[in-house]
Image 1 (tube, one colour):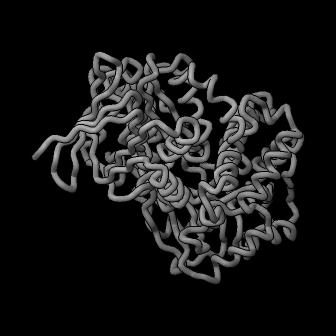
Image 2: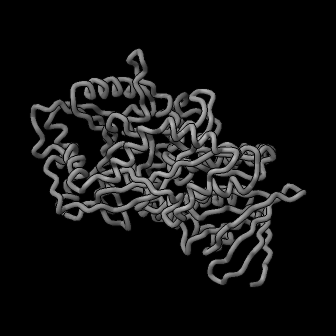
Image 3: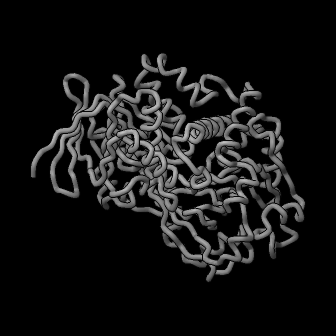
Length: 501
């Protein structure tokens, strides 16, 4: 086995949506920089970004009820929903710029317009949803929201879900037509194809085994070429760890102080996928419900129309599961090897705190198909077992860390960015809303790691993302202008949808 040396300005670990987004932004800002992407698998976007491994919801907080909590005084807290929606608007602006500049083409292959609907049943939930609607409709970001308890209106919105439903059961829904379905696997491939055309070196079958900071502040990566068996040494001034669940292991190997005391808890997901074309055609929206009492936020049930490989599909889930792997293609020892002296107490504290979650996950793993069908029938009363089959989706690693607010061993639900003090390395951990907010997350990393350069880059960033530096909540003219541009460039009108359905 020979040893080969490679030098770059930037190394991106993992060829998923995060690295593809950061690479694309950097190529626009500093086209002369040499960028290398190292991917363990033989193809881009095959793990967390793959269309079968995530929900494909363009997370804009239009329908996800866990982003709008009810406060103790009964009012609705929209702060998280505002933030997530604005972050998704940033992603849409960047994608629109790429299409406008012909960096990527045929946007209908990765994004389609689709109503986002919140659906509840039971008196208490109906009361909650109506309060949520009243709060949201007064807000510029959610101004187009509709609400109904009328069975005929709801039948127009989601006919499949209203068939054979008990007429005595109180039900309600909100609908926003400006939602989307995003195929992040397809988008990742478009971005990586564009990067290859810009002379970015994307090297597949490369497993990063270790990374060490040199005296000059740069990083040296020990890499195994799994195709040839050769050991390789890759060096760069800046490293981004975007390897999905595996990012935690690599962050730990970097040895940076900011990575100490952080653990991870893996959660797998499963979906029911519909095999009956007639059933698929009778539903055309993303419908999110309320999570069962005691269930974690990532288990909010939803019935989703999806566009996968340009074909309309219908999925229901997720059903949580447990595997000690940090990636679908990972090792059964991933969880064990992530436990270090600096995080063992944090992990033990989390284990004590999260007994209810553990019990919930065990219950989910043991569910029979009929029990899963019972959960589906809360959405589709007439669902038939023979029309649906179970598919295993992605593996996520939720961050565990100590926080001032919740103490030792707190399980974090969301996306977490870790950067070194010198700005030479950054890692992305966590899960949803993840991919939907990729552009915002990458701009955050650039602000942290390249503060001096950002002053010089700002005019170009504003060209790509017109709302950069502005609040869309406070500037409704800018909000409407960017929404119009995105609708035009990404083909997000109903007419466009019909053309490509």
